[in-house]
Amino acid sequence: ELKVEQNPLFLSMQEGKNYTIYCNYSTTSDRLYWYRQDPGKSLESLFVLLSNGAVKQEGRLMASLDTKARLSTLHITAAVHDLSATYFCAGLANNNDMRFGAGTRLTVKP
Amino acid sequence: DADVTQTPRNRITKTGKRIMLECSQTKGHDRMYWYRQDPGLGLRLIYYSFDVKDINKGEISDGYSVSRQAQAKFSLSLESAIPNQTALYFCATSDPPGGSTDTQYFGPGTRLTVL
Image: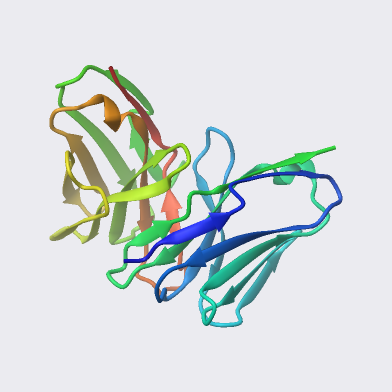
């Protein structure tokens, strides 16, 4: 059974700083997804990582996938307040159902 | 207009009542999903449907049932609501993995409170 663990669960950082959110998964996953959720809102797709070594970047966010280590990372560069949100990673189990991590609540302070 | 809509957006009900949450989509996707979100637990899959005739249980299906009335509509029912079903419920849709838009698209959510 696919299990997805994120850390940290809570992250408070200052504007301008860099940080990485980690996503470990327990068994083979065909692909790895990252989503963003603003308070009281729905989930918005950020990245889909399809293969080992995949790297995708959008603005100050960069996601990578290491299938051998069963690890994906979401790196935040020079954080700004607008990045404050909860970030979820999710893997796709063999039966095509998606398993989510618990989420990382990011707060970026001035 | 939103591509994935959910009704109602908020619902307060009492223990033992039957509740139906509805989801409609205009994205033309065959695959639809129901999740619940609880604080600190992320999203957990309740049921999913790959087409009108294909419905599957997810991670936490006990106490729930679904109906896929059409490609665009997927309803979630709580036959006899209980307080620990208080949660935020999301509907989502997708193409099959590997398609041109390989992700799930989420509705705005339904906040359900069972007293």
